Image (cartoon, rainbow, N blue to C red; front, side):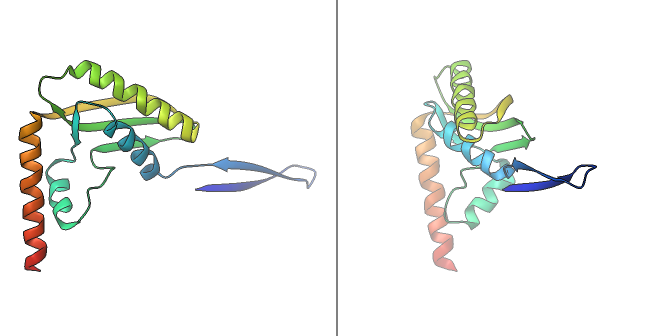
Length: 146
């Protein structure tokens, strides 16, 4: 959201200053999309409650697993991820930080000052695909029952 504030000087002159701000959700979405481009991250994870709400919705939320604190000029992010087994996690973390900083900086002009990534699980690609397939089948069944 962008807004314009009005300041007055002592001589009854109006001086307008422009201000550009972003909803936290916008920053989370940019970070989520950038993270999904990193090889080795199988999924962003939102924890138990997120899993329940995902089953009630038909589409996955790209901001799941992303927390953001957005200031006027800086951003701090917390990520919760599931990583592919056998991949170098420190390299994945470094690539994720680089992509997020570039995407947020290029799109918003904000500086990303902190990225914390918490690895919640490690899975093989086959294990992850099987779990995803089962969850999709369960979701389809629950929608048919309604």
